Image (tube, rainbow, N blue to C red; front, side, top):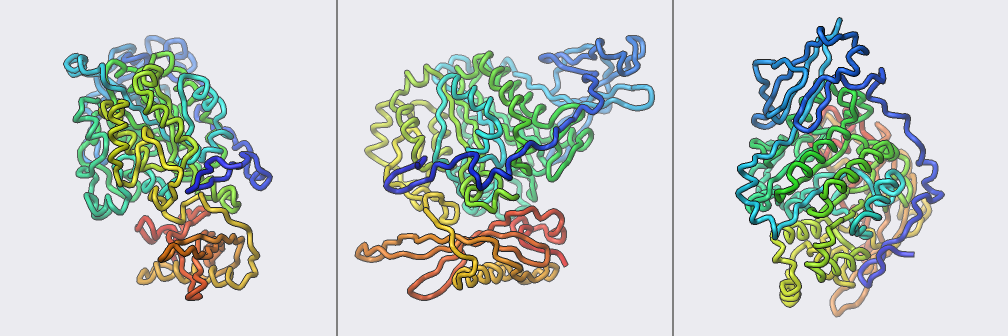
Length: 581
């Protein structure tokens, strides 16, 4: 069957355990942060920081020999931090600072841990509590590189909880619009493509993002408290091969905390991401911050965005070990009434982009179809019935990160989505890239209309074709020439040649020419291996019957990891292709 079956788009409904990918599904080795199984020496409860006296014996300490102190630190410009020049001794104390490092003297070594707190400025909250009535908090919880199907495979408990709790809609046709994280999240937060962002406020990778029109600025203007946190900040959204923000972008910004703690107590770096912070998982620390933010700001409208990369970025099957932590987060949010005062968006940027699964057609589609689940309170559905009716009707339509942006914009001021206002908006349709999910999406919507580049579109139907076909060989050679041309002028990169064709698919794409005569182009999607370096690339090559020409439809995807093969180049796009001599 089809997940989306409209005039403009058909997206296949795949079996999450299809035969073609079964060999890719297995349990990763257990990730253990707490090697000696001894509970943490220092813990927190709300704003209290305390030494856990029930475990001191295991650290060979007595009440008289416990010697712990905490030192606050603060974010400065970009990635700079400043530590206090004092360390305050404690056994149990109330904390007023946001970030701190704890040091305890053991017999032969120091015990070090990092803690983060979300303190609410009461004066701010009192002022605007009258205004709270007509606002809904917005909480975005995201996980890198998880397709909709892989979410169901890896995190069934979390999915079940969301589906059984309150009102949750799963968007089945949510399609990515760019290759990796950056071009799929920039549209969510700015409504712009990454190239438009470059044009407007980010001319090159040495520019900070401070001037860019990110949506948390709009929420802030409307009196919302804003927050943004990631684990694995080193490879974070604004920091991987980029310089990030000069000034802190949101009221609560956790990047300095994550960078400091990863540097000092991070371990278990299996590939690109640090998986543990001391005795805790990196993701566990992030979800604790997420929980504090949502719960401590419960009586104040807030906009929070929390993004996890550590467990999911490099491994198809590692997110399974995060299922219980996410379940616990959502249960706690539910117990504390957050599902009743917030619009919760649980989502990803794309599916996994490399590894064995990416050599299958299922992996090709999954990479393009991330998950998006949206939960809203009952009162919201009662107050804005048309908006919610449309949202639910759109679950089987083709949707994008641009649409998610428009939806967020509507949540800044709920007057946008009253029944009257929606009727009015339908009479004057906007001709923009994204359409709010609170409006009905057209049955005729195509990838082109939704601003999904051809190469990422999942509405097409393709068939396997022979690797020995002359057109397939020609397409493969075109891809190699295309990559070599991109690397021209970078003398440190070796020239690539075709080693083998791994697989090929063929698809006829309809195009409408003058007088609406329908003709077809033929697209070949090839997976090839090049040498030196054994890179595996996937690309779509368009063959025009009329001109007999072959042309690569950019970009060319790299679907195996490049490790340090491209150490000699810092350009974030060319890193995928360069094999350093």
